[in-house]
Image (cartoon, rainbow, N blue to C red; front, side, top):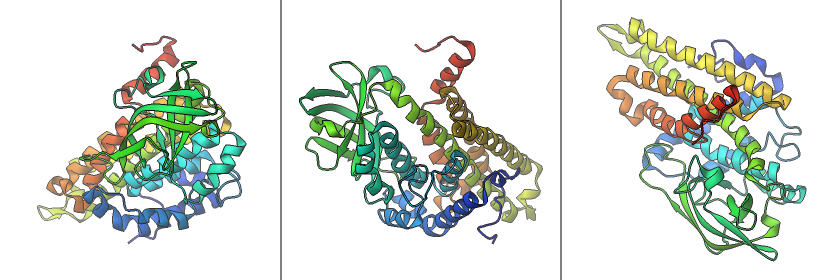
Length: 396
């Protein structure tokens, strides 16, 4: 068996060499953690469709939370976006559900507070979240609204003195069944602008019910939330969010993170297929010696290498502070489309074994469908890029 510190077989152009020695040390630590601590438990949890809460304790000891937030967590300074992306890739390479649990908490929820909250709010909530003593969730998508949520948000907020009253519903909200802090987005009835609120566990009128029967992300506890006259103090309104336009920075960053997750799914599926092709024999020889199998593997490696290159440049644009919505949208649309191809080829190489959880690839194949859809569908991200390059909006 290869040592954990060896270069990934999928890193054909040695992209990891772009990291500093310190960053690579962090990445290798994450690789070892995911391989030794997380991988052994994922198939059982995925098969049962349950979130193993012992994961939280394991992540606490891993020191991977809040690396992007200077002043919070164990790392003295914020790491580069390239390392943040590769960490998302690394986690998803082991399991997309676990990576999504972590991404919702460490990305969507914490970044909403870090970016949209006042300094007092950051200091109130982020230290406990960085230590994973408190878990976060992010509630934007609604039962009757997805791509149109910016202009058609039905969840409402009405100010009454120093209190806001929230009413409405949210759907597909990861971590919401057990989260301590849920960032809820609602339309202010007075000015018709979207604002953000941190709803804390136990606030009356907040109910989160687990969504059952999923064929993807089965470890993630997605919930349908109902808010009935939930009273939230003004101190829990994110002070730097005054319209949906202010949320764009959060979505721009997290959309790029989903593209990195898609890369991780590709790599995980490719690695499984490559190893299987070398050991599985048909007609007296390993199937890796068959031309059509090699063709699928090479096409998969091409998709991985091209996607990785795109994401490296996206991270550089982020670090330079000049990346735009269309940059992350192109990455999300392109990389998730390539991911769908790779997981299909990988499952094909496994033949009938490809639909059995025991061989892992079925989990990657199914989870890819969720990544393909969330954080903006391929169609919506395509229209964002289309508007940028033509100057013409094709939105309905």
